[in-house]
Length: 382
Image 1: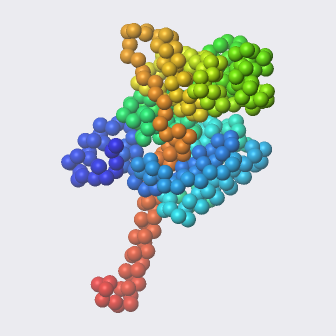
Image 2 (image 1 turned 90 degrees about the horizontal axis):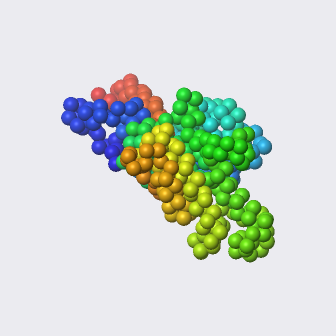
């Protein structure tokens, strides 16, 4: 992996031609970003995870707390973020803070336009936090942050055109091309879960019907299992016995666990979810033509029970199959910490401002000291 230290050769030797071949502004910034520790914050509907991350993606320390109730004011969540950052700053030399928020972030990466699990509506999160913290702050969508982390340190290393799909309660996603996150004109690109795949299908919380995430997500998996159990289907006896008849206790991780133990219904449900996943991926391939799809999120823990059927369905539904190169589909490597790691690494792109300001303060102080020594007539200053 290329680093800042790799490109410190004199002008006219190695550095200049390398930077010219990179092409995009964001990637140039990435290659020359200072190798300093930064804090990444991953904000979801149930937890806030914070960690200090070094330039190689290693987590030096992490903290986790529950997300304040969404009915509370946005300031409550911001207070939680500030407390975590200050706590980590007591033990680490933090140069910037990156925040991956589960919501729509504007193209300037300042405002959270809408967060379904938090009370953020057009919230100027970056400016509010930057005013309370002594370091630069960067805000991005959590799926964008996770995709960046996988491209830098995980399953997407070496890929020039990557699409990440995060399967959790719903479906999120992100697009990277030539080392640059594609956020769209208004910053909300990658909301793949709300592509309509079944006109007039299941109602989605977004207000539409037939959205992709109603057929290939954690919610879809649990809904199908509970419906079969509520109908007292013979194929559901295993899971009914497992929850002792309490159908509300059925969860996605439980279904995955039973599938691994050989429960036929749970295996079938994961296959169904995987097939719908493959259909959606084929649609995205027709539109975006990436070289790699990285599948992350909690549901991806099912691994080949899910991704195997997705690969099969992708090949069956791919436009021009047999006459075009096929993107490969891989599982994400960084797990639930990808969003935090990616947010911290993206923040490193703005850490340069802090380092320059800090250096100027030090230089001013040193000049003042030299001036004071000269005024006192000490030989050391001459």
